Length: 430
Image 1 (cartoon, rainbow, N blue to C red):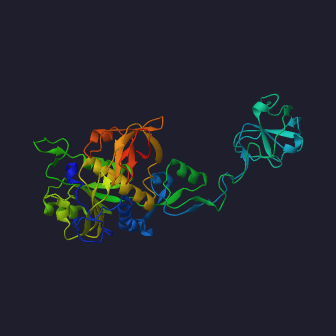
Image 2 (spheres, one colour):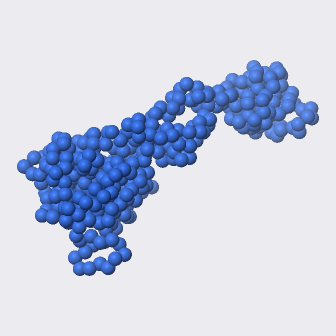
Image 3 (cartoon, rainbow, N blue to C red):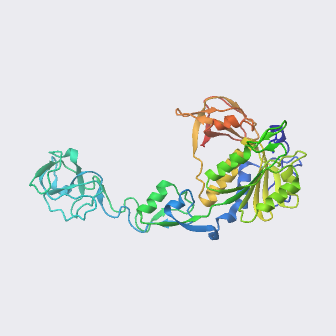
Protein backbone atom coordinates (compact mmCIF):
# COMPACT_ATOMS: atom_id res chain seq x y z
CA UNK A 1 0.00 0.00 0.00
CA UNK A 2 1.41 3.41 -0.89
CA UNK A 3 1.44 5.08 2.54
CA UNK A 4 2.91 8.38 3.64
CA UNK A 5 6.33 8.42 5.29
CA UNK A 6 5.07 8.86 8.86
CA UNK A 7 3.18 5.59 8.55
CA UNK A 8 6.49 3.87 7.90
CA UNK A 9 8.81 5.17 10.58
CA UNK A 10 6.87 4.45 13.77
CA UNK A 11 7.49 1.46 16.00
CA UNK A 12 9.72 -1.52 15.32
CA UNK A 13 10.74 -4.87 16.77
CA UNK A 14 14.22 -6.21 17.29
CA UNK A 15 13.09 -9.52 15.77
CA UNK A 16 16.25 -11.63 16.05
CA UNK A 17 14.74 -14.39 13.92
CA UNK A 18 11.98 -14.53 11.31
CA UNK A 19 10.58 -17.67 12.95
CA UNK A 20 8.41 -15.68 15.39
CA UNK A 21 4.85 -15.88 14.13
CA UNK A 22 3.38 -12.50 13.26
CA UNK A 23 5.43 -10.30 15.58
CA UNK A 24 3.59 -7.10 16.34
CA UNK A 25 6.66 -4.93 15.98
CA UNK A 26 5.79 -3.14 19.20
CA UNK A 27 7.23 -3.14 22.67
CA UNK A 28 9.63 -0.21 22.37
CA UNK A 29 12.64 -2.32 21.32
CA UNK A 30 15.39 -1.07 19.05
CA UNK A 31 15.02 -1.49 15.30
CA UNK A 32 16.95 -4.26 13.59
CA UNK A 33 20.12 -3.18 11.83
CA UNK A 34 20.39 -3.31 8.06
CA UNK A 35 23.11 -5.96 8.35
CA UNK A 36 21.05 -8.15 10.69
CA UNK A 37 18.02 -8.01 8.42
CA UNK A 38 20.11 -8.83 5.36
CA UNK A 39 21.44 -11.86 7.22
CA UNK A 40 17.87 -12.89 8.11
CA UNK A 41 16.95 -12.71 4.42
CA UNK A 42 20.04 -14.78 3.59
CA UNK A 43 19.03 -17.48 6.05
CA UNK A 44 15.49 -17.47 4.69
CA UNK A 45 16.70 -18.03 1.13
CA UNK A 46 19.71 -20.26 1.88
CA UNK A 47 18.06 -23.40 0.45
CA UNK A 48 17.67 -21.78 -2.97
CA UNK A 49 21.28 -22.58 -3.90
CA UNK A 50 21.02 -26.36 -3.45
CA UNK A 51 22.55 -28.81 -5.90
CA UNK A 52 19.04 -29.83 -6.99
CA UNK A 53 18.43 -26.29 -8.24
CA UNK A 54 21.01 -26.22 -11.02
CA UNK A 55 20.93 -26.80 -14.76
CA UNK A 56 23.45 -27.22 -17.54
CA UNK A 57 23.20 -24.72 -20.39
CA UNK A 58 25.06 -23.77 -23.58
CA UNK A 59 27.35 -20.83 -22.94
CA UNK A 60 25.24 -18.06 -24.44
CA UNK A 61 22.12 -19.25 -22.64
CA UNK A 62 24.05 -18.96 -19.37
CA UNK A 63 24.56 -15.20 -19.81
CA UNK A 64 23.52 -13.40 -16.63
CA UNK A 65 23.43 -16.56 -14.50
CA UNK A 66 25.54 -17.55 -11.51
CA UNK A 67 28.07 -20.35 -11.86
CA UNK A 68 27.06 -23.33 -9.71
CA UNK A 69 30.52 -24.86 -9.13
CA UNK A 70 34.22 -24.17 -9.62
CA UNK A 71 35.63 -24.67 -13.12
CA UNK A 72 39.26 -25.66 -13.60
CA UNK A 73 41.05 -24.98 -16.86
CA UNK A 74 41.19 -28.10 -19.06
CA UNK A 75 44.03 -26.64 -21.17
CA UNK A 76 46.71 -23.98 -20.95
CA UNK A 77 45.65 -20.53 -22.08
CA UNK A 78 47.22 -19.61 -24.39
CA UNK A 79 47.83 -23.22 -25.42
CA UNK A 80 51.18 -22.37 -27.05
CA UNK A 81 53.72 -19.54 -26.96
CA UNK A 82 52.69 -16.90 -29.48
CA UNK A 83 53.65 -13.47 -30.72
CA UNK A 84 52.27 -10.33 -29.10
CA UNK A 85 53.24 -8.21 -32.12
CA UNK A 86 53.69 -8.24 -35.87
CA UNK A 87 57.46 -8.47 -36.22
CA UNK A 88 60.36 -10.90 -36.42
CA UNK A 89 60.79 -14.01 -34.26
CA UNK A 90 64.44 -14.26 -33.18
CA UNK A 91 66.88 -15.95 -30.87
CA UNK A 92 67.84 -13.26 -28.34
CA UNK A 93 71.42 -14.59 -28.26
CA UNK A 94 71.72 -13.71 -31.97
CA UNK A 95 71.27 -10.00 -31.17
CA UNK A 96 74.21 -8.60 -29.18
CA UNK A 97 74.40 -5.05 -27.87
CA UNK A 98 73.91 -2.80 -30.88
CA UNK A 99 71.96 -5.40 -32.84
CA UNK A 100 72.87 -7.42 -35.91
CA UNK A 101 71.81 -8.15 -39.47
CA UNK A 102 70.01 -11.50 -39.76
CA UNK A 103 68.83 -13.60 -42.70
CA UNK A 104 65.07 -13.54 -43.21
CA UNK A 105 63.40 -16.97 -43.50
CA UNK A 106 59.84 -18.07 -44.31
CA UNK A 107 57.07 -16.10 -42.56
CA UNK A 108 54.85 -17.58 -39.82
CA UNK A 109 51.17 -16.64 -40.24
CA UNK A 110 48.66 -17.11 -37.43
CA UNK A 111 47.39 -20.68 -37.34
CA UNK A 112 50.52 -22.22 -38.90
CA UNK A 113 52.79 -24.71 -37.16
CA UNK A 114 56.20 -23.08 -37.05
CA UNK A 115 59.40 -24.83 -38.09
CA UNK A 116 62.45 -24.53 -35.80
CA UNK A 117 64.34 -21.26 -36.16
CA UNK A 118 67.99 -21.70 -37.16
CA UNK A 119 70.68 -19.57 -35.53
CA UNK A 120 71.39 -16.32 -37.36
CA UNK A 121 67.91 -16.08 -38.88
CA UNK A 122 64.73 -14.09 -38.26
CA UNK A 123 61.20 -15.23 -39.17
CA UNK A 124 58.47 -12.70 -40.04
CA UNK A 125 55.66 -13.47 -37.59
CA UNK A 126 52.11 -12.20 -37.22
CA UNK A 127 50.31 -11.34 -33.99
CA UNK A 128 49.01 -14.54 -32.37
CA UNK A 129 51.20 -16.83 -34.48
CA UNK A 130 53.15 -19.66 -32.85
CA UNK A 131 56.68 -18.85 -31.69
CA UNK A 132 59.00 -21.25 -33.57
CA UNK A 133 61.12 -23.68 -31.55
CA UNK A 134 64.45 -22.02 -30.79
CA UNK A 135 63.06 -18.45 -30.84
CA UNK A 136 62.54 -16.65 -27.54
CA UNK A 137 61.72 -13.03 -28.50
CA UNK A 138 59.92 -10.92 -31.07
CA UNK A 139 61.21 -7.65 -32.54
CA UNK A 140 58.31 -5.34 -33.57
CA UNK A 141 58.29 -4.57 -37.30
CA UNK A 142 58.61 -0.82 -36.65
CA UNK A 143 62.01 -1.39 -34.99
CA UNK A 144 63.42 -3.31 -37.96
CA UNK A 145 65.55 -1.87 -40.76
CA UNK A 146 63.90 -1.91 -43.23
CA UNK A 147 60.63 -1.60 -41.28
CA UNK A 148 58.61 -3.77 -43.66
CA UNK A 149 58.37 -7.48 -44.41
CA UNK A 150 60.15 -8.71 -47.53
CA UNK A 151 58.20 -10.50 -50.23
CA UNK A 152 57.95 -14.22 -49.27
CA UNK A 153 60.45 -16.40 -51.14
CA UNK A 154 62.86 -13.56 -52.06
CA UNK A 155 66.31 -13.50 -50.38
CA UNK A 156 66.50 -10.76 -47.77
CA UNK A 157 68.24 -9.62 -44.63
CA UNK A 158 67.04 -7.36 -41.84
CA UNK A 159 68.89 -5.40 -39.19
CA UNK A 160 67.37 -5.81 -35.72
CA UNK A 161 68.21 -4.24 -32.35
CA UNK A 162 69.14 -6.11 -29.19
CA UNK A 163 66.12 -7.84 -27.62
CA UNK A 164 65.85 -9.62 -24.28
CA UNK A 165 64.45 -13.15 -24.05
CA UNK A 166 60.69 -13.18 -23.52
CA UNK A 167 60.05 -9.77 -25.07
CA UNK A 168 56.69 -9.62 -26.87
CA UNK A 169 56.15 -13.35 -26.34
CA UNK A 170 52.94 -14.64 -24.75
CA UNK A 171 54.07 -17.75 -22.92
CA UNK A 172 51.94 -20.89 -22.94
CA UNK A 173 49.71 -20.86 -19.83
CA UNK A 174 50.55 -17.23 -19.02
CA UNK A 175 46.82 -16.46 -18.71
CA UNK A 176 45.77 -19.65 -16.90
CA UNK A 177 47.41 -23.07 -16.68
CA UNK A 178 45.71 -26.41 -17.13
CA UNK A 179 44.34 -27.57 -13.78
CA UNK A 180 44.21 -24.09 -12.26
CA UNK A 181 40.96 -22.48 -11.12
CA UNK A 182 39.44 -20.67 -14.08
CA UNK A 183 36.20 -19.45 -12.46
CA UNK A 184 34.96 -19.91 -8.90
CA UNK A 185 31.48 -21.14 -8.12
CA UNK A 186 29.14 -18.23 -7.56
CA UNK A 187 30.74 -16.12 -10.29
CA UNK A 188 28.35 -13.94 -12.28
CA UNK A 189 28.57 -14.97 -15.93
CA UNK A 190 28.92 -11.90 -18.11
CA UNK A 191 30.53 -11.62 -21.55
CA UNK A 192 34.08 -11.74 -20.16
CA UNK A 193 33.46 -14.92 -18.16
CA UNK A 194 31.72 -16.67 -21.06
CA UNK A 195 34.55 -15.59 -23.36
CA UNK A 196 37.08 -17.21 -21.01
CA UNK A 197 35.11 -20.48 -20.99
CA UNK A 198 34.93 -20.44 -24.79
CA UNK A 199 38.68 -19.81 -25.00
CA UNK A 200 39.17 -22.91 -22.84
CA UNK A 201 37.06 -24.97 -25.26
CA UNK A 202 34.13 -25.32 -22.86
CA UNK A 203 30.71 -25.32 -24.54
CA UNK A 204 28.30 -25.96 -21.65
CA UNK A 205 28.23 -24.79 -18.05
CA UNK A 206 26.27 -25.66 -14.90
CA UNK A 207 24.46 -22.67 -13.41
CA UNK A 208 21.91 -21.92 -10.71
CA UNK A 209 18.34 -22.00 -11.97
CA UNK A 210 16.42 -18.77 -12.32
CA UNK A 211 14.16 -17.87 -9.44
CA UNK A 212 10.43 -17.61 -10.02
CA UNK A 213 9.07 -14.76 -7.92
CA UNK A 214 5.41 -14.14 -7.13
CA UNK A 215 4.93 -10.37 -6.91
CA UNK A 216 1.80 -8.87 -5.36
CA UNK A 217 0.90 -5.19 -4.98
CA UNK A 218 -1.72 -4.30 -2.38
CA UNK A 219 -4.00 -1.38 -1.54
CA UNK A 220 -7.58 -0.21 -2.02
CA UNK A 221 -6.21 3.08 -3.28
CA UNK A 222 -4.06 1.53 -6.03
CA UNK A 223 -5.21 1.12 -9.64
CA UNK A 224 -3.49 -0.25 -12.72
CA UNK A 225 -1.92 2.35 -15.03
CA UNK A 226 -4.22 3.10 -17.96
CA UNK A 227 -7.45 2.84 -15.98
CA UNK A 228 -9.48 5.93 -14.96
CA UNK A 229 -7.99 7.63 -11.90
CA UNK A 230 -10.81 8.39 -9.48
CA UNK A 231 -10.49 10.78 -6.52
CA UNK A 232 -8.39 9.27 -3.72
CA UNK A 233 -6.76 6.73 -6.03
CA UNK A 234 -3.17 6.45 -7.29
CA UNK A 235 -1.58 4.52 -10.11
CA UNK A 236 0.50 1.48 -9.19
CA UNK A 237 4.20 2.24 -9.67
CA UNK A 238 5.45 -0.52 -7.38
CA UNK A 239 4.48 -3.46 -9.54
CA UNK A 240 6.29 -2.11 -12.60
CA UNK A 241 9.23 -0.86 -10.53
CA UNK A 242 9.87 -4.16 -8.78
CA UNK A 243 9.05 -6.40 -11.74
CA UNK A 244 11.50 -4.43 -13.88
CA UNK A 245 14.19 -4.65 -11.18
CA UNK A 246 13.65 -8.39 -10.80
CA UNK A 247 13.59 -9.12 -14.51
CA UNK A 248 16.71 -7.03 -15.02
CA UNK A 249 18.28 -9.16 -12.27
CA UNK A 250 17.50 -12.37 -14.16
CA UNK A 251 14.38 -13.55 -12.32
CA UNK A 252 11.14 -14.85 -13.75
CA UNK A 253 8.28 -12.79 -12.31
CA UNK A 254 4.68 -13.91 -11.88
CA UNK A 255 2.70 -10.78 -11.12
CA UNK A 256 -0.73 -10.98 -9.53
CA UNK A 257 -3.56 -8.54 -9.95
CA UNK A 258 -3.57 -5.71 -7.42
CA UNK A 259 -5.08 -6.93 -4.16
CA UNK A 260 -7.54 -4.86 -2.18
CA UNK A 261 -7.23 -4.38 1.57
CA UNK A 262 -9.34 -7.49 2.11
CA UNK A 263 -7.07 -10.10 3.80
CA UNK A 264 -9.10 -13.05 2.50
CA UNK A 265 -8.73 -11.77 -1.07
CA UNK A 266 -4.96 -11.44 -0.71
CA UNK A 267 -4.65 -14.90 0.82
CA UNK A 268 -6.67 -16.43 -2.01
CA UNK A 269 -4.68 -14.50 -4.61
CA UNK A 270 -1.34 -15.72 -3.27
CA UNK A 271 -2.49 -19.33 -2.97
CA UNK A 272 -3.86 -19.28 -6.52
CA UNK A 273 -0.41 -18.52 -7.94
CA UNK A 274 1.73 -20.33 -5.37
CA UNK A 275 2.54 -23.65 -7.15
CA UNK A 276 6.02 -23.59 -8.66
CA UNK A 277 7.00 -20.31 -7.00
CA UNK A 278 10.38 -19.94 -5.25
CA UNK A 279 9.74 -16.66 -3.47
CA UNK A 280 6.83 -14.33 -2.63
CA UNK A 281 7.34 -10.56 -2.58
CA UNK A 282 4.56 -8.16 -1.58
CA UNK A 283 4.50 -4.38 -1.46
CA UNK A 284 2.49 -2.40 1.05
CA UNK A 285 0.45 -3.50 4.05
CA UNK A 286 3.40 -4.17 6.38
CA UNK A 287 3.33 -1.08 8.61
CA UNK A 288 1.24 -0.45 11.78
CA UNK A 289 -1.85 1.19 10.36
CA UNK A 290 -5.44 0.00 10.64
CA UNK A 291 -5.59 -1.54 7.15
CA UNK A 292 -2.30 -3.39 6.83
CA UNK A 293 -3.57 -6.21 4.65
CA UNK A 294 -0.33 -8.21 4.40
CA UNK A 295 -0.09 -8.37 8.19
CA UNK A 296 -3.74 -9.42 8.43
CA UNK A 297 -3.45 -12.04 5.68
CA UNK A 298 -0.47 -13.73 7.36
CA UNK A 299 -1.70 -14.00 10.96
CA UNK A 300 -1.64 -17.82 10.71
CA UNK A 301 1.67 -17.93 8.84
CA UNK A 302 5.30 -18.12 9.99
CA UNK A 303 5.83 -14.44 9.19
CA UNK A 304 7.34 -11.67 11.30
CA UNK A 305 6.89 -7.91 10.88
CA UNK A 306 9.52 -5.58 12.25
CA UNK A 307 11.25 -2.27 11.75
CA UNK A 308 14.72 -1.96 10.24
CA UNK A 309 16.86 1.06 11.13
CA UNK A 310 16.80 2.33 7.56
CA UNK A 311 15.28 5.29 5.75
CA UNK A 312 13.41 4.75 3.50
CA UNK A 313 12.17 1.17 3.87
CA UNK A 314 11.91 0.75 7.63
CA UNK A 315 8.88 -1.58 7.88
CA UNK A 316 9.65 -5.09 6.65
CA UNK A 317 8.02 -8.51 6.64
CA UNK A 318 9.90 -11.80 6.49
CA UNK A 319 9.08 -15.49 6.90
CA UNK A 320 7.23 -18.23 5.05
CA UNK A 321 3.76 -18.32 3.56
CA UNK A 322 2.51 -21.89 3.17
CA UNK A 323 6.16 -22.94 3.37
CA UNK A 324 7.35 -20.61 0.59
CA UNK A 325 9.91 -17.90 1.46
CA UNK A 326 8.18 -14.55 1.85
CA UNK A 327 9.42 -10.96 2.07
CA UNK A 328 7.09 -8.00 2.49
CA UNK A 329 8.33 -4.59 1.37
CA UNK A 330 6.83 -1.21 2.27
CA UNK A 331 4.37 0.44 -0.08
CA UNK A 332 6.06 3.68 -1.07
CA UNK A 333 7.80 3.26 -4.45
CA UNK A 334 11.27 4.36 -3.37
CA UNK A 335 10.98 2.30 -0.18
CA UNK A 336 10.24 -0.91 -2.05
CA UNK A 337 13.06 -0.41 -4.56
CA UNK A 338 15.57 0.48 -1.83
CA UNK A 339 14.42 -2.63 0.07
CA UNK A 340 15.09 -4.76 -3.01
CA UNK A 341 18.55 -3.23 -3.47
CA UNK A 342 19.50 -3.44 0.21
CA UNK A 343 18.23 -6.92 1.00
CA UNK A 344 17.08 -9.12 -1.85
CA UNK A 345 19.58 -8.26 -4.57
CA UNK A 346 22.77 -8.60 -2.48
CA UNK A 347 21.57 -11.81 -0.84
CA UNK A 348 20.79 -13.44 -4.18
CA UNK A 349 24.13 -12.22 -5.56
CA UNK A 350 25.95 -13.93 -2.69
CA UNK A 351 23.90 -17.14 -2.76
CA UNK A 352 23.44 -17.66 -6.51
CA UNK A 353 26.06 -15.48 -8.19
CA UNK A 354 23.31 -13.52 -9.94
CA UNK A 355 22.35 -10.77 -10.27
CA UNK A 356 25.72 -9.05 -10.42
CA UNK A 357 26.70 -7.13 -7.32
CA UNK A 358 26.26 -3.38 -7.38
CA UNK A 359 29.56 -1.57 -7.80
CA UNK A 360 30.43 0.38 -4.66
CA UNK A 361 32.57 3.50 -5.10
CA UNK A 362 33.60 6.44 -2.95
CA UNK A 363 32.41 9.89 -4.02
CA UNK A 364 32.27 13.41 -2.61
CA UNK A 365 28.90 14.98 -1.89
CA UNK A 366 28.03 17.93 -4.12
CA UNK A 367 25.42 19.01 -1.54
CA UNK A 368 25.10 18.96 2.24
CA UNK A 369 22.56 16.57 3.74
CA UNK A 370 20.87 15.72 7.02
CA UNK A 371 20.17 12.16 8.16
CA UNK A 372 18.44 10.54 11.16
CA UNK A 373 21.37 9.50 13.33
CA UNK A 374 19.83 6.18 14.39
CA UNK A 375 19.10 5.03 10.86
CA UNK A 376 21.01 4.03 7.76
CA UNK A 377 19.77 6.54 5.22
CA UNK A 378 19.75 5.76 1.50
CA UNK A 379 19.49 8.82 -0.72
CA UNK A 380 19.16 8.97 -4.47
CA UNK A 381 21.75 10.81 -6.51
CA UNK A 382 23.64 11.30 -9.75
CA UNK A 383 27.29 10.26 -9.85
CA UNK A 384 29.12 12.85 -11.93
CA UNK A 385 32.31 12.48 -14.03
CA UNK A 386 34.32 14.64 -11.61
CA UNK A 387 33.86 12.13 -8.77
CA UNK A 388 31.11 14.02 -6.97
CA UNK A 389 27.57 12.82 -6.38
CA UNK A 390 24.61 15.18 -6.58
CA UNK A 391 21.49 14.60 -4.49
CA UNK A 392 18.31 14.06 -6.49
CA UNK A 393 15.19 15.15 -4.60
CA UNK A 394 14.73 14.89 -0.87
CA UNK A 395 14.64 11.95 1.52
CA UNK A 396 10.93 11.26 0.90
CA UNK A 397 10.04 7.72 -0.16
CA UNK A 398 7.36 8.87 -2.62
CA UNK A 399 9.71 10.82 -4.93
CA UNK A 400 9.60 8.62 -8.03
CA UNK A 401 10.62 11.45 -10.35
CA UNK A 402 13.83 11.98 -8.37
CA UNK A 403 14.45 8.23 -8.45
CA UNK A 404 14.06 8.18 -12.23
CA UNK A 405 16.67 10.95 -12.50
CA UNK A 406 19.23 9.06 -10.39
CA UNK A 407 22.03 6.70 -11.29
CA UNK A 408 23.26 5.93 -7.78
CA UNK A 409 22.27 5.19 -4.20
CA UNK A 410 24.08 7.24 -1.55
CA UNK A 411 24.67 5.55 1.81
CA UNK A 412 24.70 7.52 5.04
CA UNK A 413 25.51 5.11 7.89
CA UNK A 414 23.96 4.92 11.33
CA UNK A 415 25.47 7.49 13.68
CA UNK A 416 25.69 10.25 11.08
CA UNK A 417 23.26 13.13 11.47
CA UNK A 418 24.69 15.55 8.91
CA UNK A 419 27.30 15.68 6.16
CA UNK A 420 28.73 18.79 4.55
CA UNK A 421 29.27 19.27 0.85
CA UNK A 422 32.56 17.62 -0.06
CA UNK A 423 32.21 14.83 2.49
CA UNK A 424 33.11 11.38 1.19
CA UNK A 425 30.34 8.76 1.04
CA UNK A 426 29.82 5.25 -0.27
CA UNK A 427 27.79 5.14 -3.47
CA UNK A 428 26.24 2.16 -5.26
CA UNK A 429 25.95 2.71 -8.99
CA UNK A 430 22.60 1.74 -10.55
